[in-house]
Length: 93
Image 1 (tube, rainbow, N blue to C red):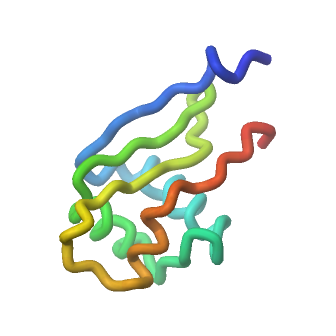
Image 2: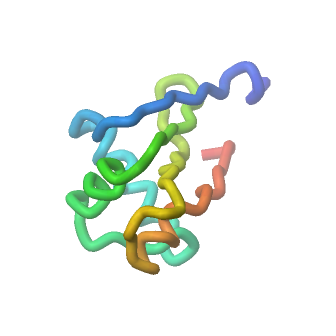
């Protein structure tokens, strides 16, 4: 398996459809405390709405990680800042 050729980035600026949003929320919660937990999927939607640009990483059609990028000057609390760190990606899931 050549991960370089099978890995794809998908850029998004709006809150994704329910299916993708649920996957992103699940990935986030699985990686707590490294990235910080969220109390609800609505909190994730709020982060995405405040963000400048975002992307998720796919292998095939499977989302394996994501990044939310926000402007540093935005008024977000400390707990929210934790989620903005790049998630570690396990390519062998």
